[in-house]
Length: 305
Ligand code: BTN
Image 1 (cartoon, rainbow, N blue to C red):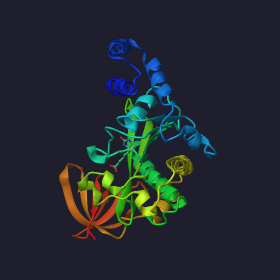
Image 2: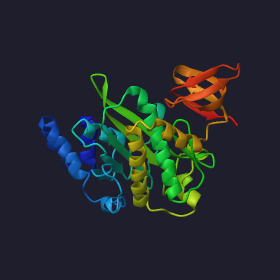
Image 3: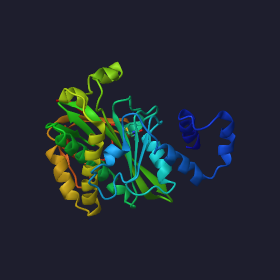
Image 4: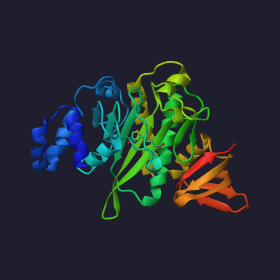
């Protein structure tokens, strides 16, 4: 982690090679303060004042750190959360060089997208983590609706789709101490002001962007502001244990229910199944070819029809 932060500081011209040795001795609080200071400096087009103006939230995004370029906002969020970041802190970067996707995959994050991570501090149970991810998917879908995308859908567990193509991915990670969750990092990547041709060829077929769907460039700062508002609203439902209300919103927008999928569970168990719904824990309920029912807790579902 220290190396990643040092690289960030190097990138931002915050240190010369001969000060790197000094950093080995710097105390971790000072270290995270340096990171926070950089996160308050001027960036190119993602602007804290535009996001914060009229932001209708109590705690999400009240602490906002924005960078030109980082390896991964999730990595930085983890570092800050381990060093006292407040509940609701948001880390945004205009570009990521080593962004993380689900299942150990990488995530393309060129300039023009919205790449952010939210730190949620209250201690939650492991069994509730899938629900936070589903809730975030609902917040993204509602954000899309507020900016004029009528037909966004959620592909289990957390891909936001428009017309069958992925426009956003969500990666939830837990920060643990002695086997309990100290905080949750919710990473969201939205392909906003990008063209499909900005992505590697192998991703282009299954990808779309807001710019292409809305046929115009949008305002990233407004998009982030709306998302933070929607996220806080759904997080409040989560805190109030109104899980059924979250699932109801999710089901309304489901891309997966009613489809035949190839289920790919961890450790390479693959099988075809029909998607019946989602359970109250956020697992996908499927019917296998032989008629047996399964709950898919983690993994991927490739749509076949
Ligand atoms: C997926 O594979 O669908 C999840 C992609 C999550 C990408 C976001 S971008 C912001 C945050 N930082 C990361 O390194 N990953 C997440």
